[in-house]
Amino acid sequence: MTDAEQIASLVNQSLPELKRFMPWAHAPQTALGQLERLRGGEAAYNAGTDLTMALFRQRDGAMLTMVGLHGRVPLNPNGLEVGYWTPTPHAGRGWASFATKVALVYAFDKLGADRVQVMCDDSNDRSRSVIEKCGFRLEGVLFNVTAAPSKELSEAGYQSTGKNPMFAHVPESFAAQPWVSDLRSRISYVNLAGHVLPGSR
Image (cartoon, rainbow, N blue to C red; front, side, top):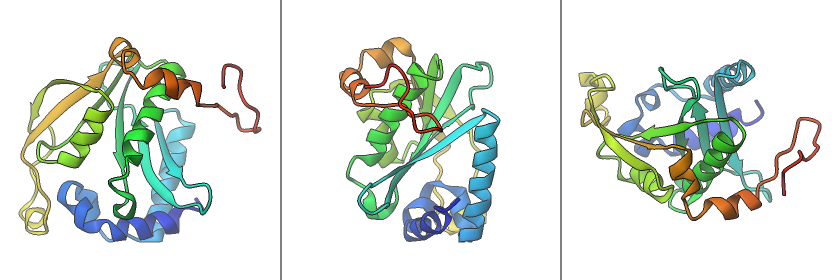
């Protein structure tokens, strides 16, 4: 909850980029709105339906990127969808790719996922770059899987091609990634009491 003001500030700094692909970015962005969103995220976490995380820089507490694991695979309770966002001031440094890789290790190693999927608009080259760096496999292209934008959204800069490439990892493709072994060896899991869990480095 203490991150609401920082997140709101970063969202507002990133609006020109966010408005291209995120309909929610066209609504007013305030610290109070972020606080309400974070409360909803905490409730979803406690219910075991959603996990939203952020990567912070230790020396100054700056939030570098956000990543989430969401239960958006309707026919598979062991499937998850990953999403990510990097604030414009920290973009282009590989933080989203790194955070997504950490989330993938957690999803497959600790949450028992047997599928992690991700999609983006066909014109969202930056998002697709993250997907490719994480080694996701292209499964196909979905058409009109998201609602067509209103005239107001389009005039305000929202872009939607109506085409969304769908990518996924399953345990076999995930395990074959060259970065998995090294990243696993550098991750520690800590419980709410601050104790490092067995099996951590």
